[in-house]
Length: 400
Ligand SMILES: *Cc1c(COP(=O)(O)O)cnc(C)c1O
Image (cartoon, rainbow, N blue to C red; front, side):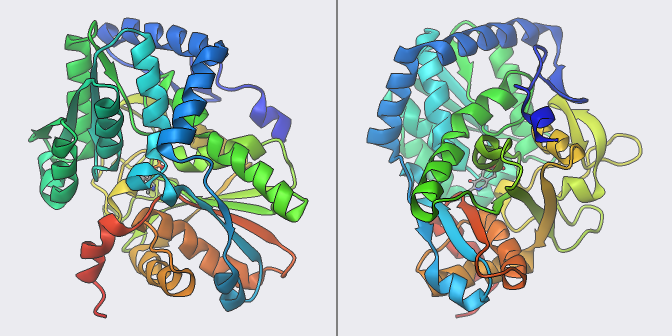
């Protein structure tokens, strides 16, 4: 089964089985082809890899620890739990792995202007950060509703010298911000690179973003072999677009003994428009450049979604995840808002680590599973980010 999975996907047109591809207007075809060529050239170029490793080490803060969560393990009373500490990276989440990779690519391509979409603002902050660092002009598109909900991140981006453009179309959230970023890209293609923030969109983005994040799994694999002298039994990560999860999973795909679990946002439960678990209520469709599982009604209208964590709150999932699920190589479950909140507080109290609400969904799944597993089972949970950004929101839900 797993050699099927890892046969160097995707194909030349960016398909993961029936998923993925490049569903864009004609005007975007050429920029995507140019990007694809430059990316694969850079990937083969040792000097690009050396430069990327240098900045990941010296600026981003890699490698991150693989930390044995001793008190959490004891509390749950079953499997031995390790945390991959992406929360310790500069700007507080895994997103900067990809932002750094793409800005080095932009520099190589001679682009001096950077654009990005952002939902909660984490990808916007990561992009504004690397843009400041390389002296590039940076424009971030963000839904007007999100701008209000995430005012602190808007201010952070501006502090870093970025221009933040509030998008007032439609629901005024992430989907509309992506549309606006694509429109900008078409118009300013000569000067501009679009740093897309997750393992989603038209080819080559899903494969490129995955490859910039696979450092998470490469490190975790080395670290667990060092610390435990064997591979883990289970990997767990939350799934929004899917970048932190595929980054952890990818280097283990050929290891048949390693099971994997992606955790989506179950929101207030699996009722229409009250969650963002695409593998629960979703169906096959095309959205923003790619073919995947999408939350849509019978007419193909994109449904609104809900999650306590803005980073998981998107109507579609990355195409590689759709494929891995169809292949039954990766399992997908969901955690509700309440379960995530419980894990958020639980991890803070037991381990002294306040996780991002997104990451708390992965921890919540472990909360359910670990007690049922034997003590010699090894779990690695991806702690994709830290929870400082979420504290004020949690305070409205939990009285201390
Ligand atoms: C954005 C974000 C996510 C969700 O995005 P993926 O591409 O699915 O990883 C998860 N965790 C954190 C901390 C984030 O900022």
